[in-house]
Length: 235
Length: 226
Image (cartoon, rainbow over all chains, first blue to last red):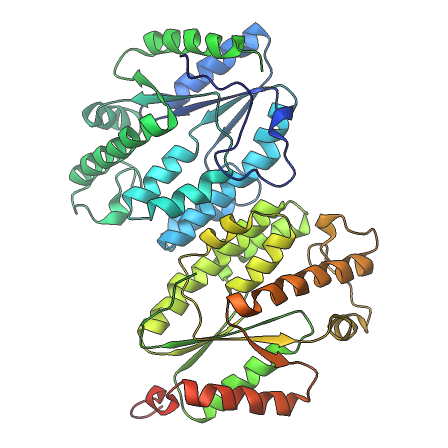
């Protein structure tokens, strides 16, 4: 973990009106597919941080005040074309970045992000979006202090999804792309494509890959040790 | 930007300040084409039904920052572009756009967004075959809009920029900056500049005269019964 960045910065252009040097808190990101154990781990991390006395703020996808309801409604009807959906998600992200993440970091909180720009970028790219365009779109994002990527094999993901909801999610199966008419087949292909994209991003963005095929407790212990290290870095 | 298209359709856009008379002119252009029985479609800035709710809410509650303001409008544009403008251009229609990507360039840049970021954001959109800029001196455009002392909305007046406490003062300053951005694009974006001070019918005659040799209008006639 020697690649830790001291002090905040944006990937590209900084959003108008934000001085990254003033951001004292920590931004910790957990990435991984549905069923990777992400939410469970966030919950445990959150409790542990509060136990230690840290103020925390939780953010995630589709949680903005501005567009989350509209986005949800549009997703249900499946009426968004690709660029429109990308921009809708980017709006949701930007709203949370400016109205939740940045103010919390300014106040010295630990921000736990249940997914970040990487899932959004991978989804767009897997659907044929232009890589350069997508990267520029999300260049407004703050570089996190650490990004954990919970990697779980597609087989495991299927089992966990069935255990949780007994169905496969339409979008997490990539059914909109038309990989296969068979949902199981489509799920497996889509998750493999997403993993390949994450693999590609792993080096570029310096993900900490966590083996998510283990027990929640074992994963939590590894995360705590790594988060502890991030917290000890004083900006 | 090098995004010229090779679709069978044609795209004509009008740009200019509020009060420049551009909407009147594109309406008259549309009527002229309709009366010739041409396949013509009209689209307007900020009108996607899908995105309207979010835009309305954001504006009403003053939730928008320069970045989200830009993204909400880009989403609106993308929705109309992907579902209407692009398919219609491919199907061989004449598409008339009341404001196009240049409105976003001007406004977002004035609001402090990075110019390169904004331009990349809209790089999926083709460049119009003709873009008219209705050039009205700032004071005239302001008088047209402000003479009735209308109730200016927060973002419309550019109040989010903190240029002035009074909405009318703010509107004047904001429009002045947008006007300057438009002027900067005249050469780089090959705008056709129209004198917005001329009588309406005279401007329209010039618009039609400019369009006629550039676009083979008879080829856009409906075949068979309209």
